[in-house]
Length: 112
Image 1 (cartoon, rainbow, N blue to C red):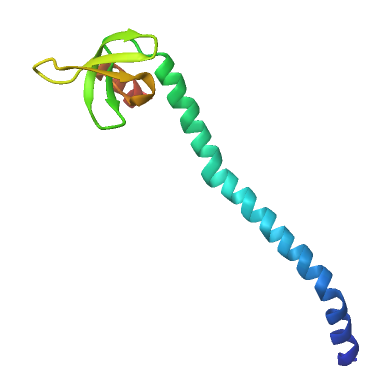
Image 2: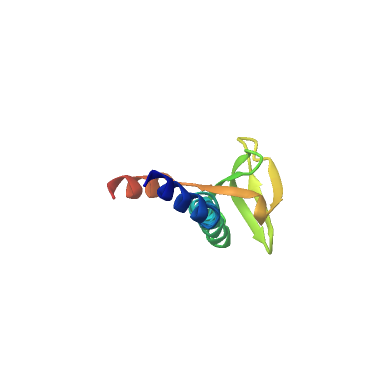
């Protein structure tokens, strides 16, 4: 009896192992998509929306870490004042990393 069971397992194992390997590969690709690719797409979409809604007076942080207030927007160029001396620096719109929330926006977020 034991010999027949081993024979059946050995006969079915090449197809079963291929299906199992293919299943695990597909599962890993799905996990990678949902843990790495989808969150990155959401972040890029949110940043693109924020960049399109920038206006003069907003506090921003650039990808280089420079913090300042927007004083002028012309097409894709943004000019910010970055210090007490009001140093003016012009960047591309894509160089803005995130919009620094104002105190009014921060209190609204905390109340939710």
